Image 1 (cartoon, protein in one colour):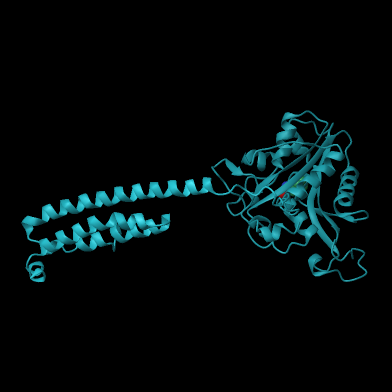
Image 2 (tube, rainbow, N blue to C red):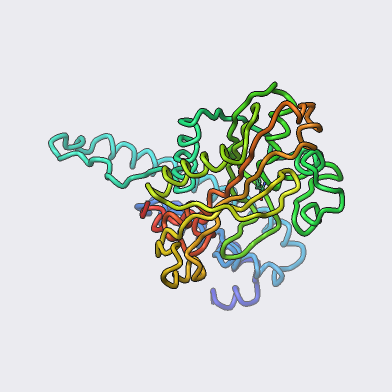
Length: 358
Ligand code: PHE
């Protein structure tokens, strides 16, 4: 008889199901022993595939004049369930906290965990930077800082780059604006220093530089250190002396150094500096070298030269009275050579398995 009523009166069936749910849900919530179990139970009632939703999907079968009443009842039930859930959650958390406070205290007789010897250390780039900075500090150079977002004049123009120089191209330089760029080298600091300090001076400028370059040995962001010295009667011999000292202190006593003529707009003469290959040590040419020095026995490490008279003039320094040298090197390259790192990306990914090796 009941089955038949239900069949002929869907509204009564829905009412009965809602009542059953209303009478039962709180006991189910109370029975949940963990927060997750409570949330699961709540989802079984209110979730998309929950019981209340299933009941309401029958609403269409109820006579139209009953639907409003049933719908309102269902919404009231939803609010009751929500409130019941919150109450149970609150009680459950209180119970967990009370249990924690009741639990036996920490066992102070257990041995302590000591920090691991390899728990952390400076990044290889930071280590190389500190080493290079220290070498130049010992030689009497002071640190001069410059901006990473720079006027094109300081990065290119005043250094003697013609306006159409390829390095200024969209391909090579990140422009932030028509006149502003991310500096492509630390040579901007030469200009900044010489415009603001009266010679004599000896500075180094460590910092981040940016170029549109990206392969196994080039990264769009990398680190350079610039060193420059301005005084009376500075010659190429002084530059070579500093380079020899630098190579000895960074790569070990007796490391051979050679200068190869090269071109940079802001130096004259300009040179690239090679050191004897640190891997095969065969710069004497007697044997065949190794793949890392491309079988030449030599490895290029930096660019340098005597500061161009035009650069002095651009900074208000009299080139007849003063002369100087400048050099610039990439820190990633030094780290790669020192540690035999096969790909520059490893220095930026900061994988702990890689970093733990230094
Ligand atoms: N600025 C040059 C570069 O980034 C390096 C350099 C510095 C060359 C100083 C000469 C003198 O390639």
